[in-house]
Image (cartoon, rainbow, N blue to C red; front, top):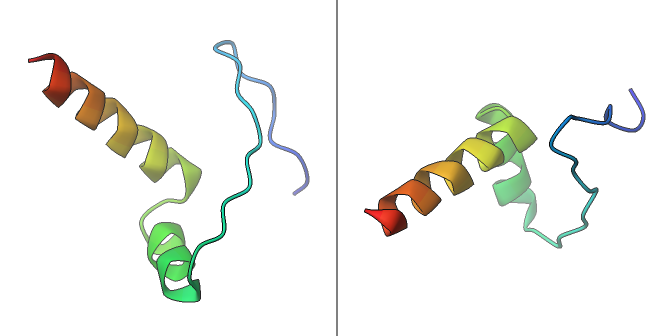
Length: 48
């Protein structure tokens, strides 16, 4: 536990206020990795 490891691409801890239901949903789908994948997919779709 604790701080995430540093990655080659860099990264930054951020704080968002989210409803408890949203937090449970995000954690159930893979947490930060799931969010990162969703952002990458959306960026790709917008570039097409």
